Length: 383
Image 1 (cartoon, rainbow, N blue to C red):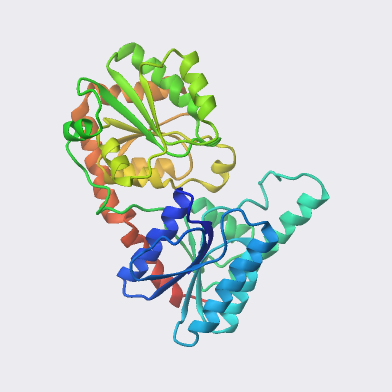
Image 2 (cartoon, rainbow, N blue to C red):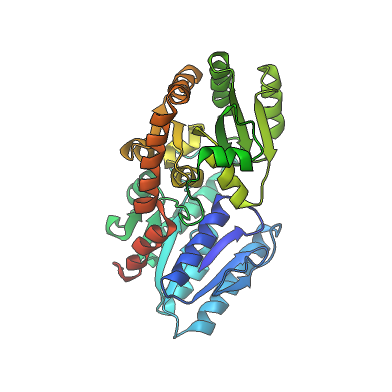
């Protein structure tokens, strides 16, 4: 199993990588994981470190491919399966895996190149890089026996832009550990989180990044507080946009109503804070993400803790939330979001009914166990 990701960075990519590795072992497979950063110390997983987080690109490419190909050769012919989180730079690994007779499955969670993607580096150099990445995607499609696309939009791009056989691709969303993220009584969660029990809580969990629409989120909350004086917003996370978020909170006069916890490494504590909420929020900007769709790990975690979700309308989010009856999806508009939040704060029983539906969806469709169970047959797919 190969993932060119930094396991020292606590983000959704790290979560996906480690949870899939863990579930492969629970399915009875021996797992050797090649990645960057510190050893995650997963039970029954052999870890091969391919450098640290800050390697220059050429050294990183050599390290990841070299360590991975060495593992393929060392394990051959006893090992037969190779799972790769696809990056254009891993083509040598994929070619080596096929040459050695491995069954290959690739996971694709982003396509930051090709048609419809705005080049980060304009000019001839950026254009050449983009075409190299397009070529790598086509090679990946030929090498892989099966492909996991985390959204339907990514599948469409792979099929129509890079001519990868539709039969090879299965759409499998990001998941959640349903044994770790579990519903607990709200009053108990509020007490354990040291929050004021007389208030109602909205919770956002995630990286403070440019793709999160804090303008709409905080604008909506400002309207909510005007009608619900005991409403409070807890923002769990940190990131490059934090100073902007703090400035916006001050401009809106929300200093007494919004709490920023900062990054919390203890995932159990994060789960408890989610449990304190009446409503959990997922608010992302469109732009690039409307092209590839979204499959937020935090959305599956909200489902698992049994809390109602209010989210803005993005590809895949509407399907996740509305098809499971787990919350309310609104337009990218502060007034619309405030209205949906207010409806749930006024009727906590209704909010909890939505949360219970989300928990059922987590158990049946979004557990990592379910994701991996549906991944394994792809190793025997077409190709």
